[in-house]
Image 1 (tube, one colour):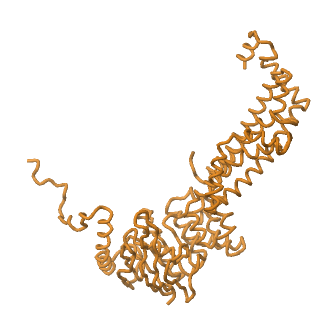
Image 2 (cartoon, rainbow over the protein chains, first blue to last red):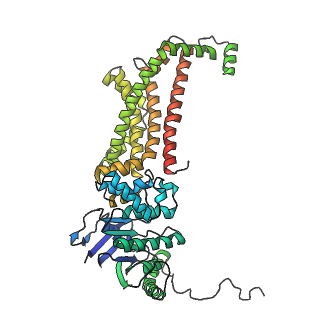
Image 3 (spheres, each protein chain N blue to C red):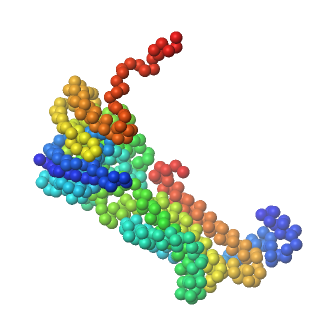
Length: 280
Length: 237
């Protein structure tokens, strides 16, 4: 196995309860070059899982290893793409992308050349000297993907990278991401709360249970995908995953809105705005 | 200025107490030509620059330590907030006893006047660096001094500039107070001699100089710096 996660546990301090367990005995194995998604309700610890792999946080127990080598701290062989682009506003687009390369002791000239190539791949070749605030949300996210890919990481960790974008931009980026993945054969771990997104993109989908975060189910999807249109197979898979998630979603809602809330009761299917003769 | 000129000429007060605009201007120009005022400006500004530079560096270093280490925050951080509320001129008697009535004493209070605000602003600037930027940099492999230089410092630049601006204003005030009471050449000393000799035209000339320098520094230097950062970052004021 390429990326191996064994018995990971993690908790955070909580105001009233002392500590809250966010990850409870997680075991996961990912093959090299695989595209794996993690879906789950908000607060289920999926982002925390990603930060642990990235080395940005430390687990209390368990072990994460890549190629048999244990992960200790952050390193540029695993690069994270965050939900928000997080470009440095004091640097130009080009300088943002070369930031990591220069850290690898690459010469400035070589780094810039590589960065420009990568920016062309994400279709931003005309914006290399712009500042981040001059770009739209989708463009910023493309820069942040370029910034991660240019490092030629072994593993690309994506933390809901398209969640803050509009639908059209997201569709375009899905396609671009799949293209890039096929081209570079990078291992991708993709976190999302969007089931369709997970199904359309990945080969393996891991469903997380919440409080504490646990792996509830895993699905495989080896269908050829274009990342845009759902088909019979992906729709079927979507349904299965949603069924798994339903219980978890209800758990979260009950905790947030009180015990009397039920996700399923509102099942009358008719147009509620239509009048039922009240205006007679 | 016309009102000033007219009221001065019509008022019962003698010329030396309420000089007219033209009189002040002639004193100002002759002072500039003779070099008396220029020397004073030079002396004051050099004190100010030295004190201000020391304060800025000190502020950045201590601000960093407060940000970085919890123990320093609990001890020094608290002390700084307390000391910040003491106007720096209050330290002058102590400074005279420690250093004597000389340049050092003035430099001491000028530095002190700017240091506290600089520390406070640097600390809060560092603390307000978004976690996202820090995570991005770490994920790309940055750490240690490189992390400080390429993320923490540039990300807190807007706050550091406004810190420098306030620190400059504080040290400028401390300088004038110190020079009025202290020794040696300088604008404050020129004010004091103007008072002693009963030359209000000289006093007003110096006041004009002080106003002009203050405006230049604040509006031209700091405001420009701030604007250029805002433009680059895309923050609309």
